[in-house]
Length: 601
Image (tube, rainbow, N blue to C red; front, side, top):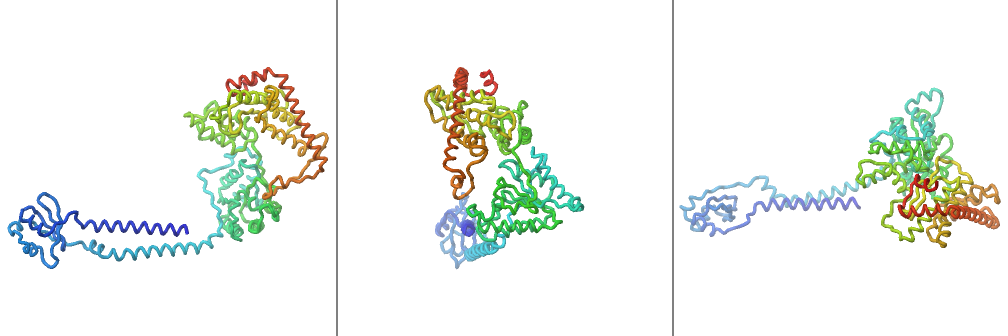
């Protein structure tokens, strides 16, 4: 219907254009001013007429003054006879130049036939567009089941050198590249290359980038498609698209098929409330059949990416289908530095920029997060009118990505500013006083996002395991602001609400998930099952009694109270340091790591 309305609109526009041209052509034969034959005779007798042009019954009269008049003669008589009937002065008439014009054949036939041909042309054009639309619609069912996969055409070739870190994953995929380049090397030894490679990693770790690098290294056709593009509202479309995709890939072999977000069609079958339906399961079954249907000599590799391997169907992960899993972890400090350098290429970076310092401030950041930091820093430099991106731009971009932009319009009153300064000073003081807490990098009372202030504490090195002592230190630091408000102002505000939520959640995880309660022992409590339509909270099941639930609450309260007491003791012991930090914060609003270490010396 949309295309039909568009075609009708084009017909109407064409009609108006042709009508306009026709009106211009007809108007070109009309003169702006007409005179009668008696007036013409009077002008001739006065000697005012210089020339008369005769075109059938039309007279074009050119006066001695240069003006032009239009007149009509009698149809049955000649011009001379017509003027003689009006008693024209023959002597004056002899001085007038007569010119007879014959109309051009094209103009004559155009004016004569166009009023009859134009409607026919418009009707024929309208019916042609109608039939064309119907023909296109009738052929759609045949193209609807075609695969939507696209052969990637990258403007810039991506190789493994453009992917920082992920050494183990690149080694796994290096064998895939070698097989596509020289399959005979493996087949002669009876080796079978893995038919499928599953890229597993958190969002932003570089799964799609690594797939592009494999395509760039192997230099073979690269078909990429999203898992959600298989499934449509019509039954059987997904399976047909899978068949067409693999048929096309075999025709271009050796080639690579890359399915992004395969969990959209690869979820566990028979999950019921997990969003499964017959169409999705048919598509998954067809993918399984195609993976098993590969010939031994077929040079096709299927790669898939997901950040939810736990919900994939077991049949999809068994040997012979997705034989290998390439695990993509978050980058460590060395990889983060390398990623920052890669994304800074082509940007004017100042010479004093220390990417190592930026990498130290970004633990837990993915490759996409680091690319966003470089981009935000470039935007910030352009906003300030700078020609280079310096260290301060990168540091500010980290805080913008973590907490949001500065809320310069959010101005605190003097009392609120004092409360925020002491609150953040309490966090920083407790963190600096505990040996197992992470070092403080920055303290600020500048509003960012929804936070009125923040204390940035980061580990000195990447951590993969955390101890009970570190968790208890985090609890005490989280309660430092709450304890400071109660000690200094003898009242509480809503500024500590988020700290209390984090502390309560952490204490409950220590008891129920990590087995770090001496009273309840080394076991976990509670089972969680993800039910998309019912929600995670409803799906959580208790596998313990009411008596154990009471003991869990007691242990959580015990951890929070003990951590709160630790924070209170530190604040009372180092009250002068607290006042000093808060005073500096109220004056300059931001304290960097070097200045904070001097205040705590």
